[in-house]
Image (cartoon, rainbow, N blue to C red; front, side):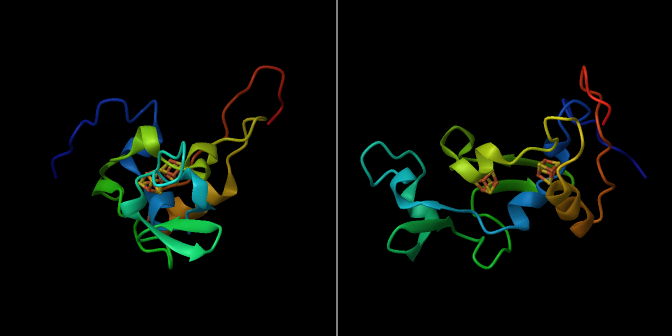
Length: 126
Ligand code: SF4
Ligand code: SF4
């Protein structure tokens, strides 16, 4: 079986994953969408949840965010990376102490990827 080298994948596991974009509902304050003053998330890629909240299309229920490009677990990218909503910006692989965000590994397991390991953080015992 041949393998494909994905540039940057070793430094950033997300490039060869994308599981969280297909696992969780991505909801956020409606004013983040670009049909509100100062909003940046493309409104056309969202759906209204409540009068005050929207979700990325494809994540309610969670299937696959409409903005996700590529093949899950192989090579993926966010087509609106610079305009992605707050939950996406705040979702981290690792906690400040270097332990893995359990939701990250939960999502990875859901598409058959191995868990990430904790990373060493200066001054931490995690
Ligand atoms: S599940 Fe974790 S490793 Fe995969 S794309 Fe999301 S944050 Fe990155
Ligand atoms: S907006 Fe981008 S980062 Fe957020 S769930 Fe969709 S594809 Fe993933």
